[in-house]
Length: 370
Ligand SMILES: *[C@@H]1O[C@H](CO)[C@@H](O)[C@H](O)[C@H]1NC(C)=O
Ligand SMILES: *[C@@H]1O[C@H](CO)[C@@H](O)[C@H](O)[C@H]1NC(C)=O
Ligand SMILES: *[C@@H]1O[C@H](CO)[C@@H](O)[C@H](O)[C@H]1NC(C)=O
Image 1 (tube, helix red, strand yellow):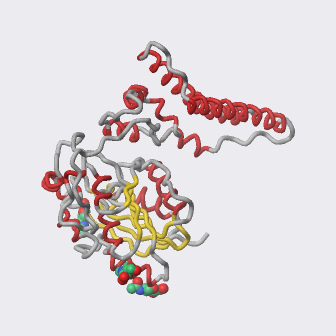
Image 2 (spheres, helix red, strand yellow):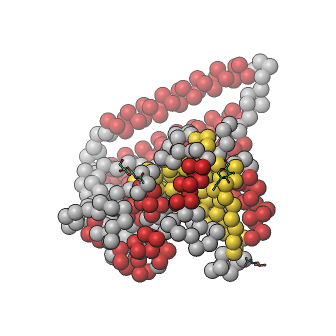
């Protein structure tokens, strides 16, 4: 009967032990490099004693819970979603699963310039090691930054000299724009997005604002999930709406591009819980990055986290979600339907550039009051 609690505790202990292990690795590798072992830094000692206190606390918790569970009540079972979720995206301790990457990331000279290893950091983050451990080094800056930065979210160009290009094969924003129209770096193309609609799958910002106004729901704060170079945030800024864009730097400096437009980039992967409190945003937009490539259960966790951060009456905009035609009816429509949102728009269409009979869905949904 104590199985559930025991396993639960084991999980917690494993997480705590991982921390101890990584501290051990840190101190042992330090000792290898310099013959006289440097004193253990205060913050590590402090962290260690916090961990010990946690273990003590957990042990105390276990003995009291065990004794009380000896009476009529069996211990509560482990919530199945906790088990499921730890398999999908191990909580915090995921860094332990990739010691090679983690050791490379943490193998730097403290108090000097950090290595240029953004792609290494991204590799760790994508494997669930998020947040990354902090480091005590100086992040390199571009050698000749531009003398002025754009003030408009739609500048005619972005300054190349504001970016460190070494991780990327392109060495300028114009190279990225030439490379592929859809990456979001061609600002001429970007300035036309969300303004007019080519098909029923496009929801324009004027339409969005109209719908919001018609349902007397204020639009002030929004989250753009996987928002690339931040064009949605840029357009909404002109309507005095604050949009925070989550974006990664996969193959291109997306975070820098968003920031150079004077917008807020959140460097976080899709599988991470939004760093936003419950019920505080008016709108969440899920763009192209949210699609059938995300495992269905991970997708469910994502959508319920969207629900968590939306206020009652807030909007979920699923923009050009793509999947196989049959899966839309069998998997995704029921999944989205379970949210119980009011459908303000629901448009589907064939994805013409797809060989797999894929379809697009664009939906605008309103969260009910609970
Ligand atoms: C405005 O809202 C009403 C119901 O509140 C609805 O019947 C009407 O279709 C809406 N108009 C538009 C243009 O969305
Ligand atoms: C945005 O706010 C500014 C300053 O308050 C105001 O002048 C401008 O008209 C607003 N724009 C829109 C589209 O509401
Ligand atoms: C979409 O594709 C299916 C087959 O893949 C076809 O039967 C249907 O007519 C197409 N719809 C449109 C609007 O082109």
